[in-house]
Image 1 (cartoon, rainbow, N blue to C red):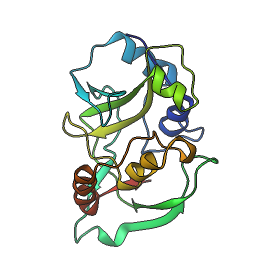
Image 2: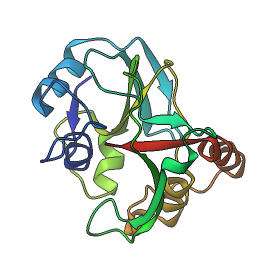
Image 3: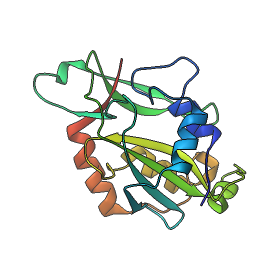
Image 4: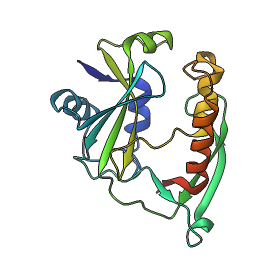
Length: 185
């Protein structure tokens, strides 16, 4: 099985101006090579048949993607309307400022099949393309953000995958994201 980074993943995981809340200590080429040369610890089923998650022990100093919201840090939460790309509509997001999450134990790499990526307008010369990565303390997926689920249900035209909304998965995601938030340096 071959894996490549998609342009979408490169801009999110390896931005031009490096940030403390993205992948650390390797280049996109080194990251891609590692995924192709090292078997994952686990392979998890994704939210749709075209999605797989490869769990790797963190070989970098990348920090966790999220942190729990507590009474002591709630005042550090910020929010704004933002788009992930110029093609997408801005949506409401929130994050911590002034908080640094611990170094992650695992990198959970989110892969889409070549066929699905082609449907979404991204041709890849590999079996699978990286569309994202979760940085976690446990070798498990964290719930997809509710807004991402809604975007997926809206379809490819709005930056999603076209997978219908799963109401139970949405409720579980709301429960998680009501008690956790991303962070930014």
